[in-house]
Image 1 (cartoon, rainbow, N blue to C red):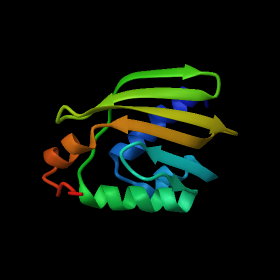
Image 2: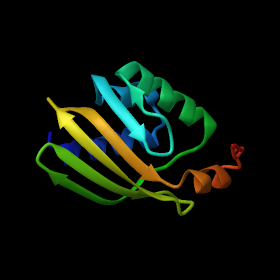
Image 3: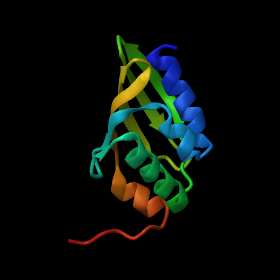
Image 4: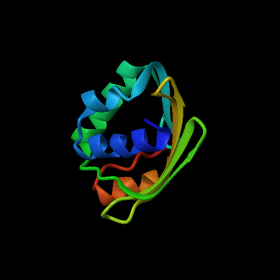
Length: 119
């Protein structure tokens, strides 16, 4: 499958809140770095991150645009509550090797009535 096709499948699994199946899209030594959070390194850490996030909030990803260039895919997304973001996926051997995501964490926390950290 192409990177674009893999990300489309990734969105389906994400929307099912299946952290175990979602982790299978990643290489064993992958990195997932959502800019509003610390980076997670390794498939197991990424699986655990998704598991914790899926228990914290009901998240839905709606594809706005999905692009492909070589071994990379770019996902522009929204959710039913109006949150928007963008994800960049770099692939090696059909697995996500590096993912970088951009979204508004403060809006996410407010939408889901989650505590807002203070410094």
